[in-house]
Amino acid sequence: MRPLHLAALITAIGLPAAAQSLRESMLTDAPFCFARTYDKAHLAAHPDQTVTTFRISPHSEVPQNVANGVVLLVQVERRGSAEVLTGAGYCTVGKIADCGMEGDAGSFTIEPRDRESLLLRVGQFGITFEGQRDFVTLEGDRGDDREFLLHRADPAVCD
Image (cartoon, rainbow, N blue to C red; front, side, top):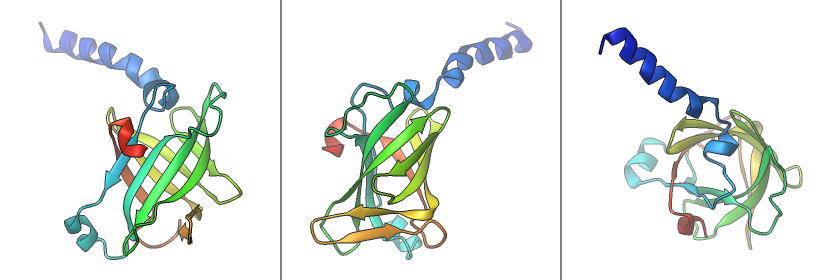
């Protein structure tokens, strides 16, 4: 096969995935989980990062009845605490997801990095999470808690 024909074939095969929205390809109606637990080496290289674990999944307590949207359960864990802090993100989804946290608790965006990972960016005014004992805000304009590369995980990881 000539190189030009091979390039055209590879491009044609990739087009359907590229044309899909994030809702169709990753934030689907099927159970999903994207998560990351940061190892000691990463945290040592990012001393201003307080988040040790970040997870997103469909919110099981909120109806998922928006065709071009999704409601996410957003969970974080922080250095020095075993508490899981949570929030609900209401997202409009196209090629990226534009999300607002419930109760005017900030915003974030999600964009695909590849078929198995997403990049979550904290909005300019941060996002706030609630726990049993604490409220925590991740600032959107400073520190190392502004972007999180999350990888596809077994849905049980987010339970």
